[in-house]
Image (cartoon, rainbow, N blue to C red; front, side, top):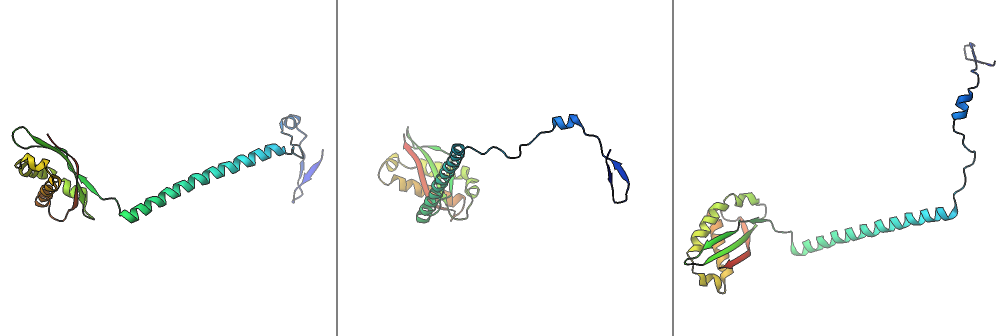
Length: 174
């Protein structure tokens, strides 16, 4: 039995060979088998096609982002809107006007600042628009007339300087 000596000179016996452990251990070949050239070519081509597809998709995404910025630079940022609830205002005998309105807010104005007064604005519109004749709302200049009444109601109930424009999304005189 062979012995190993430490720095201090104490002999330790070498353990006997373990045949069970030697049989279970994985034996590695000294030189692995070389990859087949066509397999390597296919892997490289698939990798290149994947990279080309990702580059194409990234190019399209960047192009859309730049196009959106160009449009925004020309037209300005999207306006901030406060949408009033849909209303149906009776006009008299058997007629009514049904309308849906959005208010374009001034810069740095939050929609809540106007929408907290939406019930009062709606009441004011019922008073002012309900007293008008249906011919005024069906003739030329009816949108300008209605916008003026809406602007007056908002300025009176919520305060002046809060809106820049008014979008009439739907206006039907029944």
